[in-house]
Amino acid sequence: MRVQAKVGEDRKRYNRIAAIYEIAEAPMELFLSKKWRKYLFERINPCEGDRILEIGVGTGKNVPYYRDGHYIAVDISEKMIFKAKERVRNSTKDVQLIVSDAESLPFKDDVFDIVFTTFVFCSVENPIKGLKEAYRVLKPDGRAFFLEHMLPKNRLIQPIFHLLNPIARMMGPEINRKTDENIRKAGFSIVKEEHLLGTVFRLVEAEKV
Ligand SMILES: C[S@@+](CC[C@H](N)C(=O)[O-])C[C@H]1O[C@@H](n2cnc3c(N)ncnc32)[C@H](O)[C@@H]1O
Image (cartoon, rainbow, N blue to C red; front, side):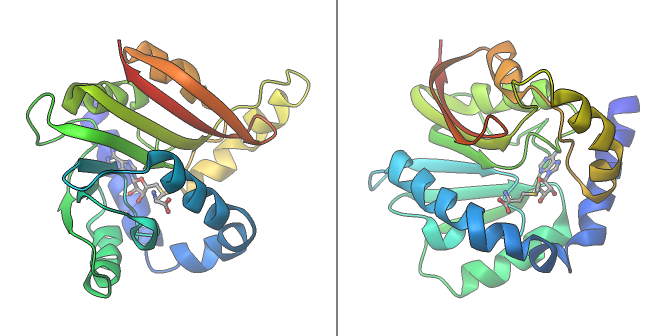
């Protein structure tokens, strides 16, 4: 009951900021995220026929980078999905958009070849529950990619992230999560972890154990 109420808060939070999300993120997108998204898709390198799930699609910023494959993209915020729909309409990619909670995905077990997220498990209220869902829907030989920001490893700067976290949370994300640990706690085995900017922004590739 308590968790459901909090998921409602996340939905409201992102519905509230959907209209200004891309403007607020523009500098970050221009200088950093853009090149990371491009790199992510070079790493994913999907094949034709792959079924690919993006969790927390937001306004669809990854859509221009999508390659071969059939994409299903979910988000808890219908206003973010509304923005993503505009992007999908203007693309030639095969994408189905669904309003759905990462913590309770409307898919059967073992159905996706690839599952990926960009900057999402900093927001999902119960990240381990959401990551367990990602695990559940991934095929046994599937691959998962998480481009996420996390609490840096350097203990000297960690207190700054804890201090600033309540302010960041008002906008959406938590900046002090140990998403690498959460990925493992959800059952995944980490195949590769790349540090994109210090140890804050990381690209984690994982597979089912
Ligand atoms: C920081 S935005 C990132 C959006 C997009 N992935 C990007 O790279 O621009 C986080 C997204 O996660 C979504 N989100 C938060 N909690 C969620 C949940 N429980 N289930 C699905 N999506 C969720 C938000 O609505 C928001 O669109």
